[in-house]
Length: 200
Image 1: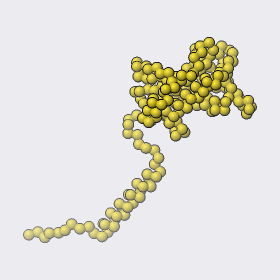
Image 2: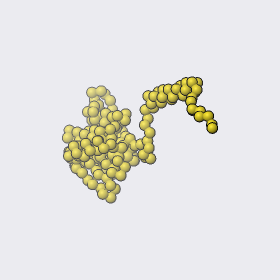
Image 3: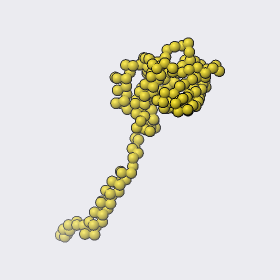
Image 4: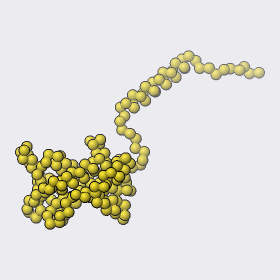
């Protein structure tokens, strides 16, 4: 009859397993403190214009009441234009709209001039600070429109005076307080919609 041997671990092997186990735990804990980037397992590239459910719900249920809404079923997009924007077609102006893309859960800010001329130049000045400059908009993709909005935002906050060059004439832009406020509110609503402040 064979002798019944109990499988036992030697004290050295137990000590090695403890060292390995504790070392592995310490390594995982240390790495978790330094790894800020989360894994993206969705198969989609991360987009700076992506909306989360809370932001989209807040915008649709609360903020959208201030906007005229155009539903584009063909493109599966919804366009929001501020209700107090300038609707005057007799003078050149720039209006921003917010576009929600249902297919990709993205939101875009889009510049809508009421004239055909591209590229165009916007001249700005802040007399109190003796500052002035010029911004050129050449058109382009969603990033070009977003970049233009980002350039305009700090100037609006500083109450800059704007003029736009159309047909070789400089014409005042956003003189009316209501119109200026509609531009600023649209940009602010868009930034909240894509949670832009936390992505800075």
